Length: 441
Image (cartoon, rainbow, N blue to C red; front, side):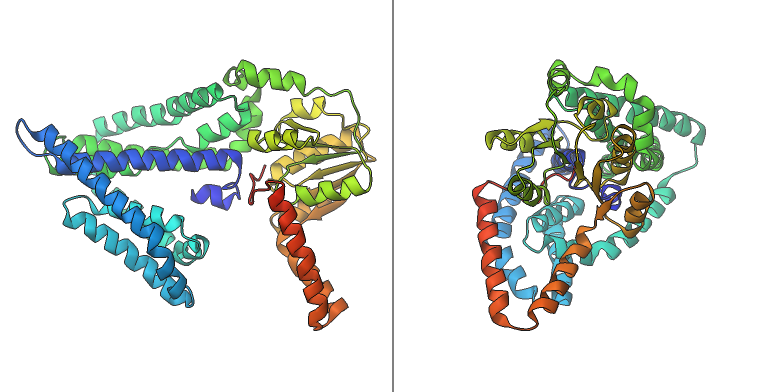
């Protein structure tokens, strides 16, 4: 999650799928923890475990209902003060963890559930930014504790087993995930990015095994092996995630087996003979307005997006569009870019924009190329490579407001006029079924 956030890929298609997979993984771990916590001794052990899971599910339902009906009212009150919002978030976490501990479950289950409930709060983004320093601090403590838990007796066999388990997690798990994604018809790039992102084993495996050791179900050697496996997979998968783009370029030709017939047929159908004045990559936060302007200029245009839901909506509104990934050279070769006068990319990924820019400069050096960047350094890098203009959304709002202040001063009538225009535009977005935010690629 942190690496995806640092790479600005939380809103990407593979980023959203990764988050969904991690949530499901944690929910399964939560169920296992509740089952183990409820186990007793003797013949009725399994029955007690199932009963405990049912009690836990009931508790979860009650807390979710409280989070849906009661929590918004409380957060609305405490959100008036940033400090109160931060303290309330911490108290909420401790409260839910204490409730689960009181009824006989692991505190970790309660802490996880508290975070899930807060994540659907209207103030989730603000809460996340406030607790981020605390999270990063305890992340360091977490790894220190992991290292201290390793017992060096029988270390030789533990290292060998950890290396075997790490290889399985880092190689077999991504292959299984890519195979599953192939069934759903995603592109080889999406499948590869998901596989490299989810290569590590879950942190909850340590909690589950630790509980098993304390109850005498498993030996400490297995726990030590899994702790070392977790450390190794986190370290190695971090580099897989950071260097996923170069790795994809290296193995791209071999990843065709992870695209099913449906995806390959889409690839064949996207070969277009018709030329377009403008090609837009990424119909998300910015794309809607750009298409409106292109229509007014009576320019022909084509939208390229790798979110199937977005393409489906565009087809419904009869907007020329195809499904594809801008980082795929085969796609770029199939697109009619040679005669396009304008190439626009609203994709924030710097590597994708670099590849697109270099390709366009090769096949159509006269085209006007407008790209998007998240940071100042990325924008400068794209300018150095020859981009005609680079959008930096974080600064555009300030620039527009500065122009309004220069033009209108402090006359409220003019701002009311702008307000009416904006409300009209927002209603237009809503009537078109425009969802915000959309996938960022």
